[in-house]
Length: 269
Image 1 (cartoon, helix red, strand yellow):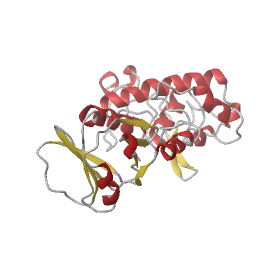
Image 2: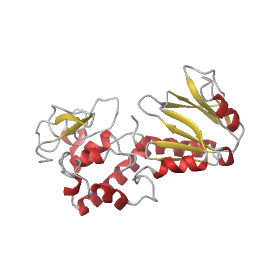
Image 3: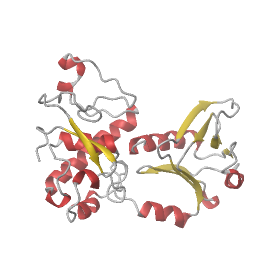
Image 4: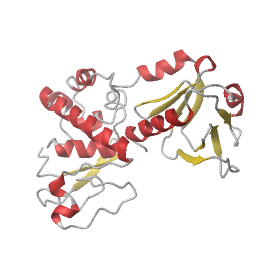
């Protein structure tokens, strides 16, 4: 599932390409046809992301809420427009570009109150300047739940997925099973600041890189990481491989239905 940086990257792209002008809106697949007919030719006021949610605000006509889920994708192209390929739920056509949405978990037209209700259910987003990290701390500091679970709870913290979860815990030497209430407040503020830095870098580059310069392939002589997710990481999907810092075999398990990765030595219980 795409993590928050992907949605913010899309929001910035769509804001730049489509906002402030009328947009052609259609649903070649047909599942969003009634809603698309309401929006077709309307001006897109803004595109913005909250965590893993994307919102296209068409003013009084409503807001399109998209959650990509596991299989949703946007494809972007310059004009001219081509015939639809596959099951295109939503098509946007602007002045210079067009984009198709396929396979989302959610694609729905909401009024302002409905859109605000979704945002209100989310925790603070490290990629939004209006977020307050202590809003998440209030939940974390009172919980017996493992910090690895809390970081993935979108009502606690919005936008963090499995990759950022594993990597930020490693970078700060935090055992994934540590109860939230046992986490030091100063350490939480450091984790938050690190997420802000890492996720903003992800927005810029379109990939997740978490490895310090001294541990990169060009510094250590190791082979670059080969993975469909891209980016250089410490522990995510590196189970059984040596830790890049201490050489201990990276461990993995399952927690709350998701794969978990950590270094037993760098993140002692």
